[in-house]
Image 1 (tube, helix red, strand yellow):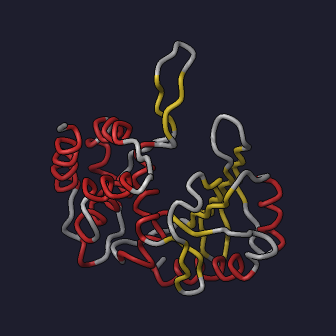
Image 2 (tube, rainbow, N blue to C red; image 1 turned 30 degrees about the horizontal axis):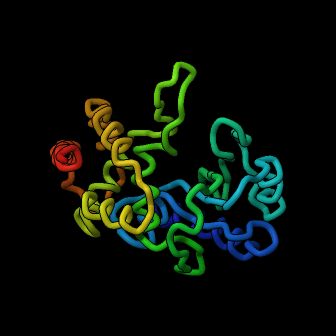
Length: 240
């Protein structure tokens, strides 16, 4: 499967979704790695489509709306509102290509400006950068049954590490970016980010890095480069 075929299938889904935004998916945006890769960084191939909807929604209804647009989903996972944000995840078969589609309740709607690129609603790069950082921290802290702060929802994978490495080098350093958006009221949890970085499973990420579909200008970036970089970020953020 070439990335041209992947992007052609993605474009078919995006066209149907965005053309029906007013009636089916008001204020929906495309974010995540695909928005970063296709509209800003051009650094790797991203196969998934991560959509965000403001406010709570019924995953079953959204799944039905996808079907009505000729985008039936299979292997579906629905996560209704409750302990975690509302989510719908599934796969679509478009033009012979399997594309993973996610729709997630947008906890950060209106924090950053929305823009339209190639007829697709997405965010300015600051918004996508902020969301990518939040993949490491999760949605924030909650208090568990014994009164301890518990970080939930974060993840550590090679895609996120690679994206943040490129954002830092091509856009703005993480330290400067976090300082700037927090001055503007983003309330990004630096302690949660430090905790997420300190738990990074670097040994496991070595194999994941080998599987990344990077574009030519970024082929030479390795997991060792990323680890050295994140060690420096961790040191800087941990210094009072």
